[in-house]
Length: 69
Image (tube, rainbow, N blue to C red):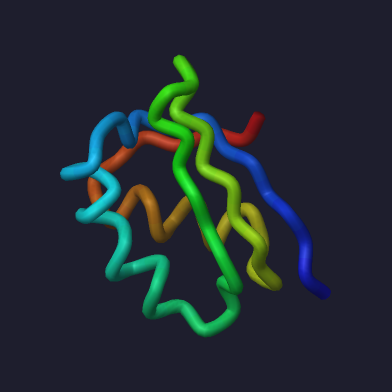
């Protein structure tokens, strides 16, 4: 079931977004995602069928901090 998940991250610039993009784009169960780098909490919003834990693992493997909001 598709859901919208939101996370607080330290993905704070275009270069950081470029580092997580291949991991998120390669995941077939992620339908869309954005990072609001203007928000102080750098909110990652993901439309997905994956669990929160799956998204957290993907972002941590890319070398970033992430927590649920």
